[in-house]
Image 1 (tube, rainbow, N blue to C red):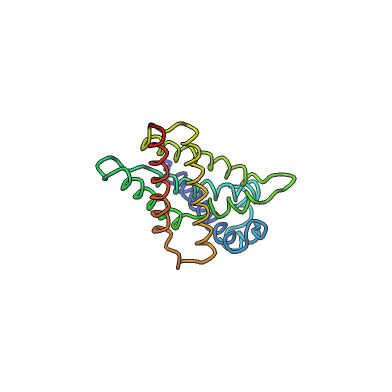
Image 2 (image 1 turned 90 degrees about the vertical axis):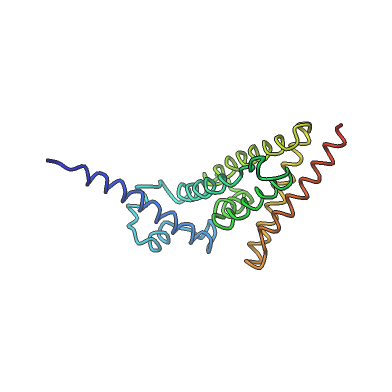
Length: 209
């Protein structure tokens, strides 16, 4: 009688090897940036042969794109406005901002690598940059939806302005922490930023009445 266990084991091994490769790529890219990351360095870090890496990923750019996607999925789960039972609208927005900051501390790779790639210009754009711009658009849509939910009376132009302000401020705070390290309380900074965005939105909403 033939057992299905070998097939399940092979599938599990594939998942585990992919995780090890991505973890190694994250560590190396965090130390050396996009240009300093190579398949050889990832192979040495994860302890898997190059053939295994190329089985999962076409090239370095494909690998970096996968790192961004994995980190983004973890982060996106935090961009969720708590329900009305969580308190006032301001309390709900502030709680969401704190969760977003915590998720960036735990899974910063999509934003760290994405900003590096977004600020660079090359004749042939890396797939990682395109993936980052795509996931950034998803982020923008999610945050705009939150603004519309909390302030339904706002005109669409105001929604987009507030969304841009919220994202730009979050980018700046993240970069500030990357430069200055853990001495920067990212959660507290995001909570303050959320209150400032909320106040701006409230003034816009009052002016629209």
